[in-house]
Image 1 (cartoon, rainbow, N blue to C red):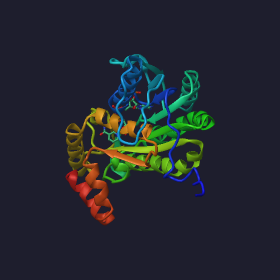
Image 2: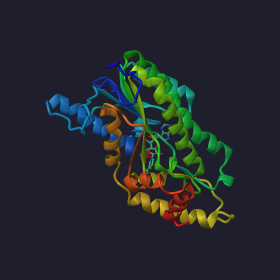
Image 3: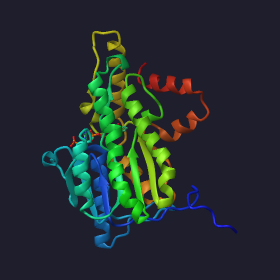
Image 4: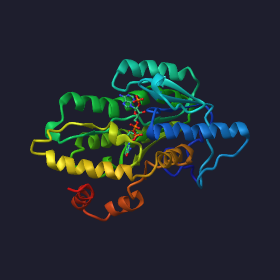
Length: 302
Ligand SMILES: NC(=O)c1ccc[n+]([C@@H]2O[C@H](COP(=O)([O-])OP(=O)(O)OC[C@H]3O[C@@H](n4cnc5c(N)ncnc54)[C@H](OP(=O)(O)O)[C@@H]3O)[C@@H](O)[C@H]2O)c1
């Protein structure tokens, strides 16, 4: 039988192991849980214990783990075995410096683009500078870091890149338009670039969390005139959103999902967890788009 072309999705990618795992935004929430999960895998190789993986997956344990924060000195509960480097995704010079430092640690095998800003407000009232900053952090910064790390992976013929998106990137919610658009944009970059890098043994996947209990609600940026035309509805949406996040699944569960494309022989384009993802995605394939949009807004009191 003729050999199948290596870029076809049913062919396996080379397994990654050892090397350096990089996780952006590792000071709290999902990023912190991800470096903690990686640190456990790293420790398990030292103790001789076998790491557990899901069916059809190989085990992965990094030699070094790099986490990032804008101010690593302010991290109050650092994870043992993780090296923290400064990175501000809104600053191209910071991305250059970070990449140069990170690559000195050794060959990168895994990159998790997790850092992000959660922004909210009616489209009409979103300040231009806030919009620019959001896209610098959630989209251009992630792409910028990826462009610096990817060549090393491509030259070595193996690597896994994970973009942490959001289920809102698949299912838009009113008063979150900028955030929804940034998460849809990063998914677009990832889905298109997958085919480019597959022949070089590199996988790119998107992980879309639903509502996750990370305390992100307190850090969300909000731009709204509460006495203006959208004030009342915005307040209703935000109350429901914060409530969903407070009752959401843990960051550790998302970290488990992030490990799947890293250890999978054939990483899927999209993974999702939280907010009833196993029901919502199949439902979206049978319901009209307008019905899905109605459901998402309804879930947030609109
Ligand atoms: N929580 C949820 O319900 C949820 C749902 C869907 C998707 N997500 C996505 O999951 C990712 C992590 O969210 P999380 O809930 O874990 O939030 P989080 O606890 O607030 O963590 C955000 C991380 O991003 C970093 N960060 C913020 N601005 C940055 C910048 N300008 N440059 C570099 N790093 C920056 C922060 O680090 P420093 O402040 O230390 O710099 C922090 O480590 C985000 O991309 C978010 O959009 C979260």
